[in-house]
Length: 94
Image (cartoon, rainbow, N blue to C red; front, side, top):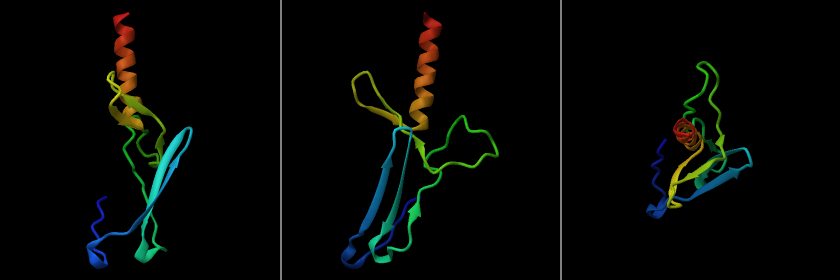
């Protein structure tokens, strides 16, 4: 979801809360002119292995995947999914 909300002076004031856990991570945000409205981020990213019909979580696995050059590759479900593909290909080559 993209939020485009003009503020006085053309600046958006935003408060963001990030929960980085050992297993799952999530985040939420609120505009300072309406501090009682909190946008909890749901469907942060789709889990490619999610069982159809099960509710989608507002959190993602705390998993960060880097390239061999130590650059950012992906985060969350995408990182786990790509890592598993690479691992299976590596096992197949062994």
